[in-house]
Image 1: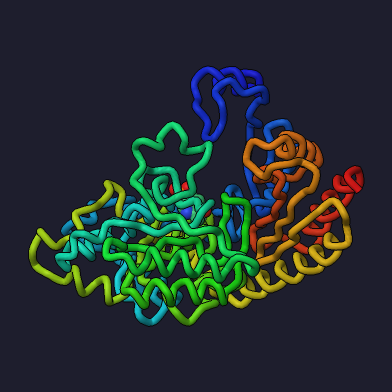
Image 2: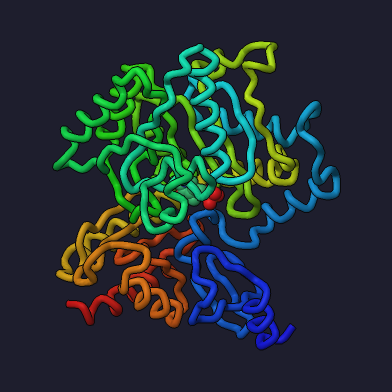
Length: 428
Ligand SMILES: *Cc1c(COP(=O)(O)O)cnc(C)c1O
């Protein structure tokens, strides 16, 4: 297909995510991807500074990951996971247990981040149902949260322009304010009030950092106290680690920063190194016990056609081995240090605010663009500017952030940082 044909047929046939159908710009045809680079059909190289929506951790077209998929595809590409099991799935469960808190005891497979949230919510709701506390139906969530695009996930996410057409279909949720050092006492009070209600069942949160909500960060001390308050009332805590998992925050899980552990942890995105979709809902023994029954009435009757797909499990296992290697761990450390030095320089500028770093994520707000938001004017200017320079950055409104694959070199990071400084010059 020529580039012209691709443009035309794409426009004619394809409905792309998160965009108006009448889009002024054309989607860029990619030919291949390698390491941190996306290679366009017209021969340009674009640095993937956001890990292709936060999924890629070991670089594109990684040969070890490709081989794991290929080898498993030749052996058994897929088989029904009801009534059967296989080594890639069992191996993955065993691997994940090494990362999860000691209290964790079961792994449930689904297809993506949103479904891992749906499953966690259903486990939490049915936990109370099985205990015959059917009045416990209310959920606490944090203002501005993003947990995915399916209905349950949308319902526990912050209400905004993305979900507006669906407001009438979303179940009611008790939102607490996003916690900061300034308002935390008030937030703890809100949480205490909602959690002490007889109807409260679940508290769901993105630990340490709200991703889509604008890379908003809060401290481990605040997270620790929020979990403690909820669990004091027996409320089920769901940590949405879909973005934060697998080293993004500097440790394997954001949960590793606290000693009060959640009851359910959702994983996706980085789990397969960014190759194939997989959702994991892991639970502790407290949840498991309530489902330990031979009755269908107490079972979680949920599953997807591709549950436990062997190719996906195999590549997740290979990605796990790479992730736990000394090389990968020192890369995470290195990226974090580079980000910190970059952040120190950014803080000297007048046109940026709230410069923040958590592990391999660095973010800041660009001043003078008014409201922070996905459709802000800042975005329309920043995205094409950096693409032109060969860097993929998708700002969240006026929030510019970097979340690169861990294999990115210091030289590649330096190129990105320098281009950002050049861009910021005109706002000083
Ligand atoms: C991306 C994301 C999700 C949804 O995952 P999908 O795979 O896109 O469905 C849920 N929670 C968080 C925190 C995310 O960043």
